[in-house]
Amino acid sequence: MTDLAIAAHGLRKSYGDKTVLDGVDLAVPEGTIFSLLGPNGAGKTTAVKILSTLVPPGPGSGPIRVGGHDLAGEPQAVRAAIGVTGQFSAVDGLITGEENMLLMADLRHLSRREGRRVTGELLERFDLAEAAKKPASTYSGGMKRRLDIAMTLVGDPRIIFLDEPTTGLDPRSRHTMWQIIRELVSDGVTVFLTTQYLEEADELADRIAVLHDGRIAAHGTAEELKRIVPGGHVRLRFTDPAAYQSAASALREASRDEESLTLQLPSGGSQRELRSLLDWLDAAGVEADQLTVHTPDLDDVFFALTGGAGVPAQPTKPNQPKEAAG
Ligand SMILES: Nc1ncnc2c1ncn2[C@@H]1O[C@H](COP(=O)(O)OP(=O)(O)OP(=O)(O)O)[C@@H](O)[C@H]1O
Image (cartoon, rainbow, N blue to C red; front, side, top):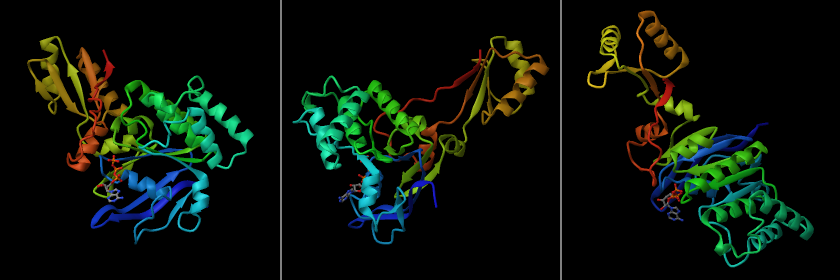
């Protein structure tokens, strides 16, 4: 009846008297990337473990459906539909990459022949063919993560849970991983991605939910979330003091910086707003030497929602003003 790959209502979980998830609703359409974003300890892994049948939901949780199957009633069917890559890799360092893959093929009940075929194909696809016969303990962090995802893909799951897939990776490996994730989705796979990196959610996710204090503090597309917080503005910079003065006296709502001959106007950065500003400058015969647009980014959203709690473990990209004209 639905094209939701994952649907959960009122997800709850406590450990002792610590409430980790306090009524979380999730709805992930098929073939999309959904990102559960939250700081360390927010409960992301707990959500993944519940949705992948590794731990039971807490009492009072509502119904959960994964891959069209009821999690409580048909856990085996759910397991057959999903793949899970955890923060703590399933890769066994003592055996080779190829052996890890073949072991996974066995676990997925593939025939020997099919197991070999899939292993060869996936090792090739993830650029691991050359290292296939080497012990996985000799692999770099990025290679281990790629092997981990390749192992997850044995058995062709339609839904993949990636729990912090890029934590600890260097920027190049992180970008490779992002590319892999995009390719998975272009093959029609649904990806449930947890991350503490705002930039990663922004890059990849169709929809994002921010987990805070056991609840979803906000959800939507990255653009929708960015609209939650004020702070967008346009900055006009002049080199000619006379042009600056005439613009400043006409644009009364602009805040001024006399020293740098800069005016700053609140703006959501929409095309309409920018066009009317440019039209106005043209009509007034004023020429700014530089016009930059600053839109809030997910950092702003995250800190607004979580009150500054939970600083991401790694600094995220600073706000980059987007050059609109030179
Ligand atoms: N088996 C357990 N027993 C007791 N407490 C637990 C258990 N598993 C998780 N917790 C607690 O639940 C909270 C959420 O943990 P979880 O691992 O889900 O967070 P997370 O958002 O994935 O964070 P991280 O990025 O650190 O993995 C933490 O405070 C953790 O200590």
